[in-house]
Each structure stands twice: as C-alpha cells, then as structure tokens.
Image (cartoon, rainbow, N blue to C red; front, side, top):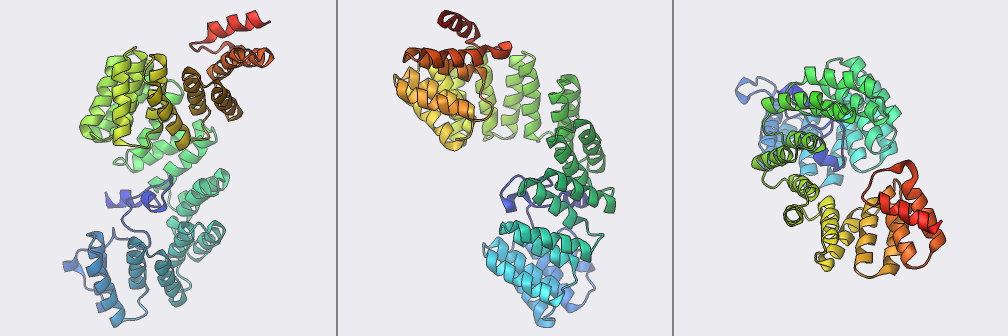
Length: 435
C-alpha cells in the first residue's frame, strides 16, 4: 500500500489545482512514508532524531517533529534531511517563505543532491515561478537521472500550470523509461494522451496503471470514462462493478453508474445509485444535483427543486444546482425572484460558460426585463460552444423587440444541423414565418 500511494506525484491539496498524479497531501518536501519503526533504528544520533521527527510529522504532531529535527541539527548542523524536515513544518504552518529559506540552506550544503533540487523546484512551483521551476526540475533530472519524482512533477507542471500537454507527455515517458512500473506516470500519461484525443494510446496506459496499482481507483475511473465516451455502457458498468466491489466507499463510481442508467432511461435505477452515494457520504452535493436532474426529466418539479436546494445548502458553490434550479422555476412558473438570483449566482461562479448566460437571459425574459435578456443572450452566443437552444432563445427575444433580421439569423443558427431541443419545432415555424 505504501509503495502504491507514494507513486502518484504531487499532493493535490497542496497546490490547490487539479494535478494529474495526486498522492496523499501528507508531505511536500520530505518522504514520510519510508520511515522505519523507531525500535528498528540503529542509525547515527542525527539520523535517529531525524527519524523521530518523521514519525511525529506523520502523526501530525508538528511541535514534537520540530523539536526532533532541531535536536538532529544540534548533533550535526549540516544534516540536510532535518533541514528539509523544518521546511516541511514551515510549509504546513503557512510560512512558505521560511520554507524556501530552509530549502536554500539545504541546497547550499548539498548542491549536487537531486532530491533537494526537486524539493526546491516544488517550492518554485508553489510560488508560481514556473519558468524557474522548470529549470530546477531539469537540473534535478541532470543531477539524478534515475530520480522518477522530478520527471513526474515536471510533467504535472507542464500539464496544469503551463498548458503544454506535449511536453508533459515527454516528461511522463521519461519517468516510465526510468521506472516502467511507476503506476502514477502511466496514469498521468494516459490522462495527457486522452486530453489530445488519443484515446487508443491512452487506454493501455490506464490498463497498466490499474495493474500496477490495483488499490487506486483513478485508473479504473479513467477507463470508465473512456468507455462512456465510446457509449460502451456495458463495459463501463463492468469496470464500475469491479471498482465498487474492491472499494465500496468510492463515491464517484456510484455517480457514474447512475449516469449510465439515466442515459439508458432507467431513471429509478439512476436515483438508487445517487442515493447509494449519499449513504456513503451524506454531504456529497453532486449526488443531489444528479437526483434533481432525474426528477426534472421525470417532470417532477417540486422534487427537483428540493434536490437542487439541498445541493446548494451543502455546497454554496454548486454551480449546476443554481443553474438547474433557475431552469426548473422558469419552466414551472415558480418564484421568479429565486430563479433570477440562482441564475445570477451561476453566472457569477462561472462567467465563461455560455449555457449559464443563456439561463440568465431566459429568466430575465420571464421576469419581464427584455433589455437585460437580450444582453445576456448575446453574451451567451459570444462565448464558446453556444447551443442551438441558446440561439432559439435569442431569436425569440429579438422577435419580441422587433428585430426581425437579427431574429432570422438567430433562428437559422438554431435549426442548423437539426439538433434536437425542446424549441426546435417552434424555431422552424418562426423562421418560416419571418422568411
């Protein structure tokens, strides 16, 4: 278990963004997973104190960990591992700059250490000094060509911070060349390849990661996603069943199973899966969003509203709950004040999403504010990936304010490709009347 969990790269909670190879956010600059039991230690006094510090750090006792690292340095003031331990404590206490100073001290004492250089690169990454971090990671690789961590961490930085997927792929492949059994590197490579649409190349990487780290659910979940994208629902369910048999508390798997049932029109089975997720984690707000969606499809507006409100109560930033609640209220002549606030909140949380502006514009129209509706809907179609229904909504509002030419253009875009949406027939009729 220790080897598997250590193999997944940066700690996702430390950086704050979505990292490709997450590992437990227990340590950033030191490795607390390899400390031997205290009774087995027969090292030098400095090493013995250091190992005590690592044990206390793993237990979350920062005070005693600091004391142990300081004792180690009293015995040997140049014991760099203990300096890294103090850097870790400073980091955990929010003293990031102090952590950086400790790392500089460690590098001055051991300038040829690949591990210390990797720790310094992570610090630079944390400080968002990405160009410097890139140089530091590459130097770490030069100093320790067999050090896998620097390759994986560099790949994560390329993938997440620098948006350079191709360089990320090169870094992950470098890690695999060093250690072909590095589960995290195979998983990360699969994610990077799939982001470029190279699904056939990504799948064997996920399979390899799954075989190397059978206790980690991420590779199986990635395989599920691939099969869902191909609409191979039976195969996706097989993976999900296997995952839940092994790890019945992995909540996202219940959502995936529910989604498959929802796509298949098996609405009650879908709700059962979403409710199963809530039995594991009663505060998992996405499950309530999903339940609301099923209730909305089933024309059960009261139940849908209750689900969306519960999702918002659990997570005040649950964007889709706000958007969908606004839609349900408009569709069923509900409280327009609540609908408007919900739609505005969704736009506030995600101003770059076309569909949220569409909802806001449609709510504004229903509230009688046509001028604002036009502004919001024009914003919606200016953003990436506007839907045919958004153009239909814009065409309706243009018609209502007498802009026939603009309405004609909007309805034409709405009916292009004959996409199926609730207003398609009306859009076709309106277009024909205008022409």
